[in-house]
Structure formats: structure tokens, C-alpha cells
Length: 172
Length: 283
Image (cartoon, rainbow over all chains, first blue to last red):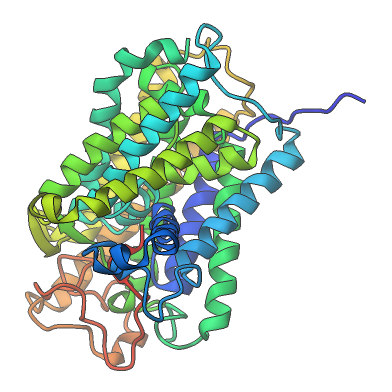
């Protein structure tokens, strides 16, 4: 039996869906969407499990773990779990759930995995510095017309376009 | 008025946790349908090949922005109880540049990497490992990077406030910018890429949507303009009075902003309003 892979949606339709979801988040929760916040919780939880003393002394991570704080009982973690579940639901119903390393035909799998880790590391630092990522700042703060979020959004595109030439082989 | 539901106490903690999961579920599902579980699709915006990232982002921002302004303008939602983003201009510009670099090198941003992992992408797992490591690096060097982290602290600052115009005017400008970007990429964008097929919206519907956005932003211009006329320069009055529920469009908002007019960060919520714990960590 050959699985049928559904088409992607029109970006405008998907955009309206995301926009209404974001509006729903503001209406129900009083705050926008977010993704990188959950990773801060995971990092703090992991660091606290391995080195509780160091984590509780760290001026940043101690805000997220230690004491009576439970890093997993946090909105951002529940939302991240929801995003994962929603992504899987979407991939399953579209016939797109397929284990693979996604890369350009010319690039090697090892290069791709190494670059993914490097890019993740840079993004991890960047999201903490900017107090959010594409979801929390660009989308949510953008819709609220926050000055810093718009500056962030333009900077993301600027950074991406500046760097794109140097890593083009990964995608070709 | 009892919205936003959680901060005003209309729903409790348990309902909040359930709601936040389902909101994430919808977000993840729409991201997947947009094609954002694929790093090649995401990154092709940086090679001028596929404009989905730009179109999805700006459509979502415009829809949520108009919704927020109408909801608070009509008095359906108390904007003072919504968490507002504080601006740290320097930190956010440097962070944005770095995040853009991380995006094109790694292929994802944090939210889309979760969707990609759920679609079976091993490179997304590697990327998420990097995210955790990067967050740890930031935490470990926090004392060192703190000046950068606090660079350009301005408190809650909105574009209308900075530009000195009404929120309706800025919103109309954003809508216009988005429509111009959509039109330009539709007309001149490269459509010959070998990316997976996209179910395209009929041109008639695209035009109808664009028209609807223009009508809605015109409504905001009129609504906010009238509100400013009724309440000239009353912007110093902190937090709208509770009696604003029954006022007409726009009247609940002080001229010049979606954000609280108070220069102090955030606490403009009237008594008894719960804030999402760790408000600024929401990201």
C-alpha cells in the first residue's frame, strides 16, 4: 500500500490558523506563544539533576530550578509538549512521518548533524539573550507591536540572509 | 469583563495547563501543515526560493494583531491584564542576528524543531541537543554576558508609543506592508523550485482576504481616531477604569498604544489580576 502524502497548505491559510491560535493564547492565557522557554526549563532541570549546588548558585538557572520549583510543571513545557503532539498529528495525518536526516543531496549526513548541533547551540544562546525566539518574540511580541520584538524580527532575517551564502552547500 | 481568562481568574490553574497544551497542539499542527517540519523548506526563504516563512509569519502576526486591537478596543478583553513584552533593544538586536545565523546553520528555530522531530527528522534532534547546550552555555556565562543581556533596557515599549501615533495607524501600516510583501513575492518570487507541492489558495480568495484585511484596518483607524477625539490626551491616566466595558470601539484604550501608558514595566494590571508566572521568561 502506497502512502499518500498530502500537499502543504497555502501559507496564507496556515498563517491564519497560527494567527487565530496566537489570538486564542492571548484571550485564554493572557500571554502569547513560546517555544524556547521550555528548553530553558529542560536545561535547568538537567543541570540541577547533575550538579544541584552549581545550578542553585548560578545567577540565571537558579530562577528555573532548585528549591521548591518543579521545572516540568510549567506552562512553557506543557505548550512545547503540545507543539510536539500537534506536529506529530499533522505529520501522521499527512503521511509525512518518516525517519530521516534532512539535507541537500550534495551534503553528507554527518555534516548536516554537526551543523544542526552548531546552529542549535547558537540559537540556544541567542534565544536567552533576546528573551525569546521566533514564537515568543517575533510572532507574539510582533502582534502586540512591541518595539523590541520588531527589532528582533528584522535582526533575525538580517542574520539569516548574511549567513546563508556560507552554509549553502548544506542545502544544495 | 473576564478576559483574558486566566489572569482575571475566570479559569483556574488546572484549566490553564490543559488550555496551554491544546494551544500548543494547534500551533504544532498548523506549523506542520505550513511545511515547517522541513528544514529545507524553512531555510529556502534565505535563498529567495520559497516565501512560505515570510507569508505564514506575516499573516499570523496581522491576524493576531488585528484581533488583539479589536478585542481590547471593543472591551472584550482587558489589555492591561495581558503580559506585555519588555524591550531590551541592544540585547534583542544582537540576539536576533545570532538567532538568524543559528536558524540558517541549524535549519530550524526552536518551535519548528519540535515539529520536525515529531516528523522523524534526526537533524532536529541534534538541533535540540544544541539548543539545550546553548542555553547551558548562556547560563554558565551569565555573569559575563549580563551587561549585554540588559543592553538597551527600555521597559514596556510599543511601536505606537515610540512613533507617537495611534495603534490603529501602526496596525494599518503593518497590514499594508504585509500585503505589499505578499504581492511582491507572488509576482516576482521564484515558483520553479522543486519543493513538495503546495495546495494553493485561489487568487480570488487571496484578493478577498487582502480586501478584508484592508477593511479591518480601516475600521481600526476610524475607531481609534474617534476614541482619541473623545478622550484627548488622557494617556497619562494609568490602567483603564473598570467601567470601560460598555464603551464603543476603541474607547477602552488610551490614545497611542496597545501597551500600558505607564513607563514602569508591566504591573499596570488592576487589582486581583494574576500574571503568568515568570512573565518575561515566556518565549
